[in-house]
Length: 255
Ligand code: PEP
Image (cartoon, rainbow, N blue to C red; front, side, top):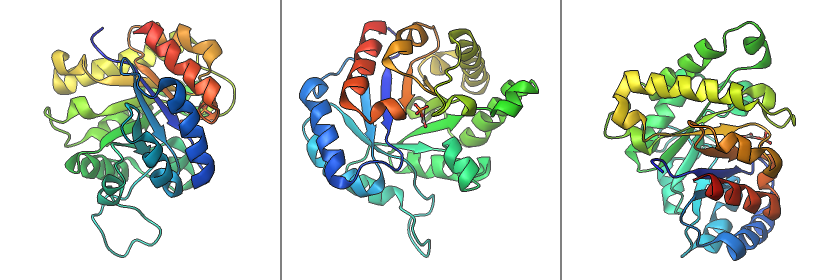
């Protein structure tokens, strides 16, 4: 095993502080001390503190779903890397397609966030992926290349292995329509090649590339068996303890 698998739950705009703590408690009760898979829970900002308290002393890590690149200042409604760190977050999802689509986030803005996260010892989970229209017009790889190169501009060789990339075809997110293992592996291998060109093979081999898009216990094992699929970024199936735990177990079995 050269790369430890990662299972990260993106709760999106779901769970109050109280409900989040209950879900985290159920997850911790069964897999709180699992270290063979890197497990990350990413609740909404308002549940970071309550979930963080449940995760204290456990192996499961805490992640946020977004952050602002600036340190502080007049950015109403935004949260900085330092604010996340003081709540003991270790990871942050950046460039999710929902933020690209609904909040107009550009590759350049996402890049500023990636650099700010790294400067503050937060591990970015950088989301990349094509829309259905882009896939149908044959531009999947070009789009993914633009997203990866855009997000990683200025990321150094010392930093790259702390970055996690999540390939999330937009047409598979929350739709129940999962990419085939061949479709996913093709893009993951392409991203690995791109990383090899940018950082050299030894470092590229260490970067975890997750698949995201309707991953569920029923389809995870097949995806996780692929050479370049190093885990999953999970939306819907992370909102229920049983399915999330089963995904972690599938990743452990695929390690
Ligand atoms: C996501 O939004 O990151 C995601 C993968 O969602 P889902 O698993 O619900 O498709």
